[in-house]
Image (cartoon, rainbow over all chains, first blue to last red; front, side, top):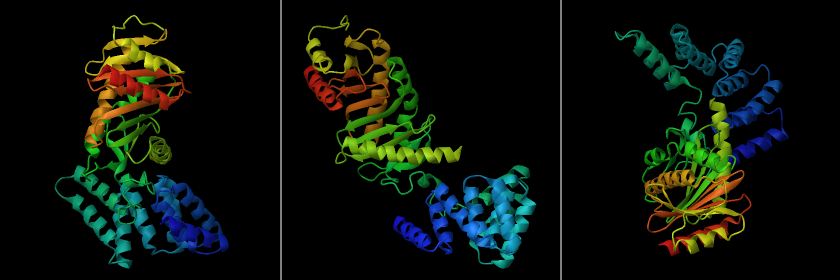
Length: 282
Length: 121
């Protein structure tokens, strides 16, 4: 994907009026590079203000950034230009589910189904939303709306990698050697495997719960300022812990073939990605 | 430096570490309970408290590394704006701890800590 992004970027640079910005913006979005995707979509919109797909792309990026008010405006604009635009109908349904207006959400989904009867996302979201009308009452309805919203979310798994994976999108070892934890040892992103390939994410996370507080206390006691990392050498591999922001801790694990100095560089890159992700999540 | 708590035999091991330029002090800490076994620290460093926290951090790191399949921890280094804490566990479970200035030669301190760990056993 990075190569494709490079190719599309160069095509767009050669021909700024090209519609290639739609693919490039979507790809950056899927990689979790929301700021870059935002810039591409906005520049495209300036050149093609009457293109429904450009407004739809921009709305999805805004929704990724949880700017739901502006996302609503953009999807609304998309429908003014192209009243049967499936992306916008689904997007608005998603936002209506988010605010609990199930009636409006279902109406938009019904409209989408009329024009795209084979769209599995629409059918699934409708089924989930209608599942809430049972005898269980309001809590069931709320749960059903939440499930339907999740199904329709612009970053749904079918369209983009899982939220957790996106923390370290594009970084080496994202699924076996990078882990982002909160202060209670809950996993925020990434995963860890031992040298035999077994998933050890939860066990390691549990042992590292509270390590950030402990490191901060030790540092304060010694008058050493703020802690910036813990590098540890093991018999079979190395770890590096970094505080990317707040009480979160980033863990990077590599085998002994990776020198400690290089591990620190890998950890810095991953910490920058984690910091961006944590800021977006706030 | 104060060396009030310095049982005979541990002094040479601590000397290996404290003679490195930029090291503000060294301690031997019981890894099991975080108690100070011996120390050579500059004035103002609260050895007892540092020992307890270092042992607790060492225990967390050891368990996490074992759970990750990386084997026993050989050396770890808490990096801070204004200095570092460097630790090597000896085979007996005693931790050799160094408190250092920010511009210390980490590689050299690591080597001396490993030598001290060997001496302590």
